[in-house]
Image 1 (cartoon, rainbow over the protein chains, first blue to last red):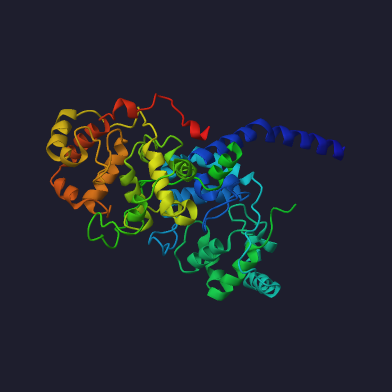
Image 2 (image 1 turned 180 degrees about the horizontal axis):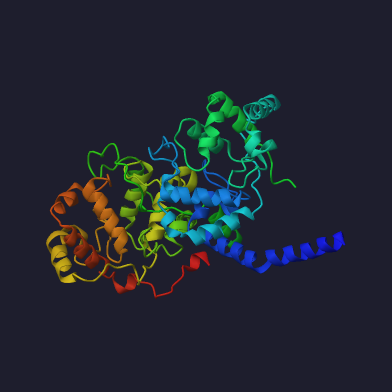
Length: 216
Length: 241
């Protein structure tokens, strides 16, 4: 009987998944390619240029709120020393090309994608450095929200942080610690991240950036 | 080829030859003159362009300026097809050298994305030969006679009878440009936010009212490029098919 339920449920789940979600993902992909997202975040959200984040396989809810917050100016970043403009400004300038419904489709599409492979660091970190980062990640308490190895969050509105570019991770942690990035749930993180100095942030970022989410 | 193209497009993509909208941060310094030359600009100006490499470089630009170089009619990205090579070289070199603020385009203008001075020369030549959008974005169309008069009295001297500009003098072709884009640049030029603007223009428009601005830019957006420079409606750049 129980198995029967399971089968029925599985059948229902497949039906529920099917055409509507597949359509949404396809629509999201089209938006991703035509509304200039791909220019910075790369093919299938996994090949970002410079220090921009990979978006493939990120939590849908988190993606949506971040896109909304960048659009409305709630999420700002520290200034790019090269240009003197906040890192978020270039994106904010094109966000009027997308309405709220389109942002939802984009978030669905991006979540459906295969996570990016870690970007190798040069010079490659030693095992000691990775271990030190891992230890820091644990003792600081990052695990509580971002999960073991940063691969799975306890709440869908939090970001998955494993395998992100190191420079991006460093910037986000620093911006949150220094009160530059204050949107969404950032303030919940403040109490924790304020205990991290630059070296600790670098160690954690080095460790997280080399975790491979793409491996099944 | 197609594969390579798709991949290149996907991997990099994008670049605005001229600025999309962004926030109000006033820039720190204004260059001493609007066209000092030097650096990569001079270097690129003296190189013989290679159209084939120009096409390859343009893949990066196409994510924003579109494969036709027509930009978006809402003015987020300007039409760059048909622009004078020297104008394109100057603007690109200025954005790279941070003489013109454009945070959206800046990362794509960097040498590691598109290459050095030769690439600037190549892509400028490629852009110049693209046929232009026959259906660009235009203004409200409510005050065109006034706009025509203003244009005649204030703009013709540099931008030409039909907005054709002047390659030799680095004056941009503005005919057929999207209205909203014209408006944004005009406002930035007037406010000093577009730092590489010609001070003669800043002076020329300082007494324009808001109504003057709308009228003259509306008129400009309706100036047509010569027939031989216009594409058929619905044209798609075959280099990227």
